[in-house]
Image 1 (cartoon, rainbow, N blue to C red):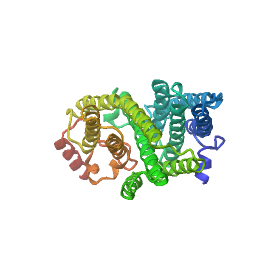
Image 2: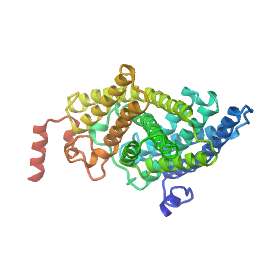
Image 3: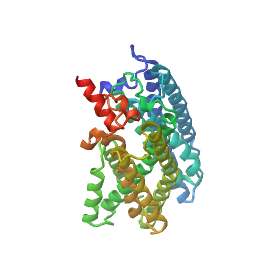
Image 4: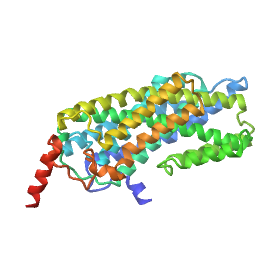
Amino acid sequence: MSSWIDSLNVSLEHISASARWLRVVNLLCLSGCALATLSLLRHWKQHRAVANGGTAVANPFAKLTMLVLTAAIVVGFVQVSYRYVEVNHFPSQTMSEVLVMFSLALLVSMFVLHFAMRMHDMGPGWATVDDALLGIVLFGAFLTNHYSSTLSTAQKDLPPALQSYWFPPHLSALMISYATLAIAGVLCIVYFCMRFWNGVLSGGQTLGSQIVILLGLLLVPFGHFVTIPILVVTGLVFLVLKRTGDLPQAAAMGGLEKTVDQVSYRAFSVGIPFLTAGLFMGAFWAQEAWANYWGWDSKENSALITWLVYVVYVHVRMLGGFRGEKAMAVLAAGALSVFFTFQIFGYLPDSQKSLHRYTDDNVVPREGMSGATEETNQSARLEETR
């Protein structure tokens, strides 16, 4: 609990300016999450009033939520600028720096998606989905920042291969793609959570189907921070709807599921071009750094698999006509692949031979990584042992 309080305490002594500004971002994220919840309740009340022939009431919390999100983004860029000055390079060398950049990318992606999808102008029903997504993203950004503060924040000099003009655009494109595709993945979790609880409370699904959905949700990595909270909150919402007699009927539930499916596809459509651009920039950078566009490194292979999963998603959706749970299952597989590439990769045995382990605190990249051949690297190791 003390670490959670520390991640919000801006008055702590002996912390850097960037760490202090990061705590301001955390405070704004939690405030925005609370406002998004209030906005969701107000929009849901509007939705019920309109459905019963009434008139919608004003919702000041929606604009306040966007103001707080905008402030969090501005302060986030201030934090990154201070970190840039402190480490004297683009702040994406250590895992803690990368996670902070990912958190900022989450906020920026949500800001762009909010206006690009214009769900807040499509009626209180769509606005409710928008509020829920805003709250989840803001809370997710806070959790990411909190986790980054538990990692090493010591300054590390850039190894030769990272001293390139490709470093900032390559990492920025990947972080934006990961953040946007993560939002699409969260929507997949929300979709299956809704199906699970609606099946439990309405009896619209077989027991076998409910067990399959539940096991799939619980097997999602990092589930204690993502899947389980969404599952619990969704269950509470559906339980309240059951008690008040407002549990969506089959037609209404189908419309809601279709809405989430469409929103997730729109989020994916924003993220996939950035993922593709990140892969291409990485290949050009590898040619300059290691004289090889593609070396079949384990990290490269993992990133390629992720991209191919999303290519499959495009094909089955556009050509195969997949919608609903089939499309969501493929999209969720892509989100899992992103997670493995981004966070789990460093724990895999084959990753020990990878040239991409720059974010590991216990790994010191060799000079030979900047383009020397394996024979040169072996010669250097022999010289070190003499």
